[in-house]
Structures are given as C-alpha cells and as structure tokens.
Amino acid sequence: MVRKIMIAGNWKMNGCLEDGVKLAKEVASAVKSRNKCPCEFVVCPPFTLLYSVKKALRGAKVALGAQDAHFNVKGAHTGDISPVMLKNIGCSYVILGHSERRADHFETSKLVNKKAVAAHENGLKTIICIGETEKQRDEGKTIEVCSAQIRESVPDNATAADTVIAYEPVWAIGTGKTPTASDVEEVHAAVRKVLSQKLGNRVASAMRILYGGSVKPNNAKEFLSLPDVDGALIGGASLKSEDFMSIADSVC
Picture 1 (cartoon, one colour):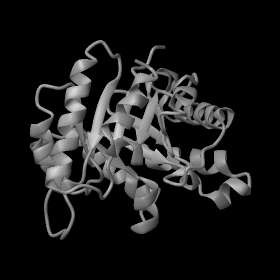
Picture 2 (tube, helix red, strand yellow; picture 1 turned 60 degrees about the vertical axis):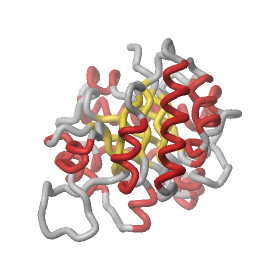
Picture 3 (tube, one colour; picture 1 turned 90 degrees about the vertical axis):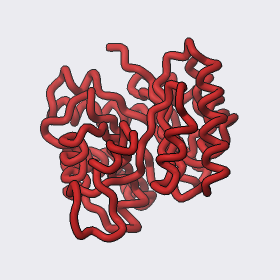
C-alpha cells in the first residue's frame, strides 16, 4: 500500500513572533516552489505562534499542528489548551505523547490515549509519539517498550485518516546520535505488527509511521527509503527552512 510521506516540523519551545513568522513564510515559499512534491507538510510551532504562523502559511499546502492538547474542551485548567481551541484557530494536527512531555510532565500512555480520543472527537488528527530511553535500549527492551506504548496510547478506534505514529528513540532526540537504518526498520515493522493486532491489518497497513530523532539532510534519505518509514518528525532541523526542505527533497 502506498502511504503519503509526511514531513513534519516540531519547533518545540523555540521562536518569538518575528522569527516564527519569517520561518513560516520561508517554508511556505519553498513548498509552493515544489508543487509536484508528493509529501504532506506540517509545521507545529509553539502555542503563541499558531495564529500568526497560520496566516504566514496562507496559500501554501502546509498543515498547521500544535504540540499538545488537553483532554477537556474547556474548564478550569490553567495553562492548558483544548482541542476545540486548536481546531478553531486553524490546526489540523496535534502532537501527543512526545518523550519530552512524558518526561517533563510525567504523562502516561493512558493520558496520551485520553488526549487522542478528545482530539479525534473534536476534528484534530494526532501524531502520537513513542520511543525508548537509552537505558531501555541497552537492556534490549526497545520493542517491548514501543509495543506497550502503542497498545496503551493509541485509541481503539483510531484510523489511518486520523492518526499518525512517530517513533522517536529518546536517546537520539537532539543528541546527534541515531540508530542504524536496520534498527529503525525493525522497530517500525514491529510497531506496524502491533497496530495490526490492535486495529486490524487494513488500518495498520495504511497508517503512517514517522521516524524522528536527529533527522538531518545528510541522513534523511537513508531513513526515508526504508519500507515502513513514512516520513519524519523533525526537531532542530525544522528551525531552518533550508534544512527542513532539504529533508523533504530527499523524497521529492
């Protein structure tokens, strides 16, 4: 089955107004110039930039995503933002369960699942992140950990239309370290097998699984050419439009 490659940028906690708008305009212009590129593009800026980035992307085939969402649509949740608010401002996607949220905010897979259900119910597509720590990797638990996160984080009624998975080994995020191509393919194949067990073969074969973790222009082609890798969730390299688009060019 042919799955459309996704090139998604997670800007994390980076960018004030002027720089964020400038970056968004650069990405928009670059995507417009590649009108035959088969990729789906997504950028996920901080909450403070969502509205301005949405305007800066106008006319370009680049979807807007957020970096988190609460599981309630409104209420007394100081500092949080609801899926309804994100949808209203123009978001199509939301990243959930990123390792930095799991570590810094003690988010469990059960909570990620609850957030994903709420996102889907309110018209947002989710990019659900999974990945093992270096300790877990050294103990040979990569497949076990990632499989458990899939089973617990992904809603039982998830579809290929509303859910994307992103495998990001925690030890490779922002470190410059990367797993081998064979390691990545092994994990992606295992993840698809678990998705098949959970959601059925048809959904699993159509669902996209991205790779993330120190993805750069010089290693993107190797990863994106793997059979079960359907795109990239890019961190640091998404903060420079040239690097972000160079990664896309490896498959365009």
